[in-house]
Image (cartoon, rainbow, N blue to C red):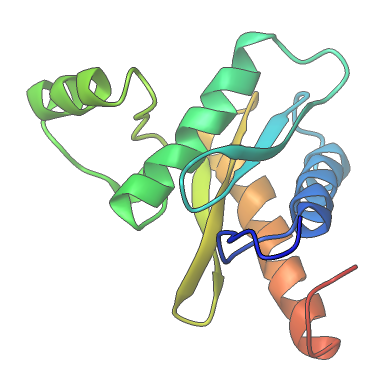
Length: 149
């Protein structure tokens, strides 16, 4: 529909690319099956995929980690808060606040475009998969002087 406003940020092709790349990174590194999510600036899911054999709960955790990074404006594993505060924030956001490694911001320089999250392996492995995907996406985007298609 022409003239309809839209959020700035990631396009679905970018989100799909990030998800596929993070899943591939996990497979390359021998991680257990991952679920990977990409969310927009409102924290709404653009793309979500769980690898074959992945535990069903990992999908929701991947989304929550991405939303956590977006809410805190930093990787979800870099959030250090006392348990009572974490409980309060989880309550405010309906459980979508998971201060464990695995959620990262997707940026273009200083501009936040969305966030990506992964779950299914150890938290640091989850984060390595999405961080590597984001880095590769940024590198490819710079090399092609524009968004990936």
